[in-house]
Length: 371
Length: 99
Image (cartoon, rainbow over all chains, first blue to last red; front, side, top):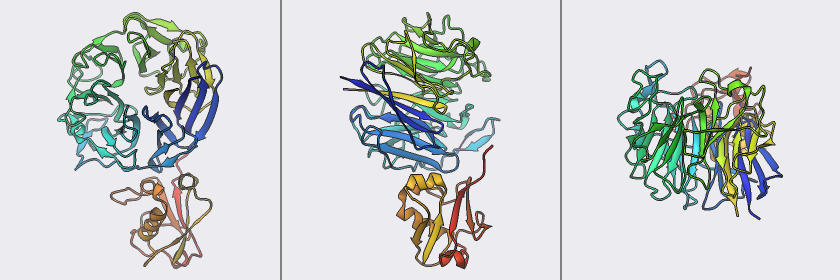
């Protein structure tokens, strides 16, 4: 029987949760790397037992760990992320120039076909690639050296490249997102880049429709519809039908259009999920009710999904990389909270169960669907 | 020279070390030569104590020898004889930064 493996990164270690295809009994393994921040774990689609973890600490910096056995054992690989050339400056929070400094890896994106290839999105924002399983990393400097780089500013969490979306039909086409610069697209495998933020409106910046400067929290794509992108922005849920060339708002009847994660159903490209959060000042759900919202129409019309989720006195957040879907039928949906809960829905969001309840604050959730 | 190095728990965990490390150090025993020997024996520690490129100490890492703070000393200055002859450890610590 097929199964799933949920990879959970937390503020104090990594956890691996496993279940068979029924997804009703879970085994929790971990913590791996106890005490370290694990911003993200990811598995190779080409070799699912090969996993990578981004392990970091304010004291001891960045470590990348790799497992060859589905997360049972790990070994460190390369952790040198050197910007190409002289990296120059971006803007600090107060608008003054600030040197580009590597802080950590936020997101790992393994290649769909090559088990040795993966991208890493880092803070301060840049894109790196490894072609040797993570032993060495090379920056794709065309992004950072895009003319707008000196004007990028950090979001509250740092100036991070947090989202990497690769077009499965055309691997030379990449979308990335940076807080707070926005979305950029490359059509030549990361050599050159263009900002793709037309249609975004951010009232918090001096020019609300500027080409760059938008705090994009997350973008998502269904692999069968690579020209359709969904975005959770600082405020606003957005959609593009032309691979990011233009965006339009699909917040519709959400109780709040602020939030962090967004994801797409594995088998229904027009079914999307968000977790509304009250505001940028109150990073907790409206009315103390933890509700996932689902749209079956690609945005605009939304329904609250509450069965099994706390509907009173709930003040957790769900971070941008902390939602994922599996590939089973019915599609499973998963998310983790800053309160240390990991919730799973084996029925596309209709009902939810906490499959872990007392972990450290969850930074990221990824799911592997296993044969 | 055999030099003893004491590491903080996170770095012992990363390098899979139990207790102190005994390192053979060639030539003058300095912070640089000790850290070079440490990283050569435990490559997983590269980048965690000092920067890969510049070799500067990470901001929240501190170095102690014979109960003295050596964090801001010249990395090429000779360490105390008691460290060089192995009677005292060279201690690497994470700076106190808790609540």
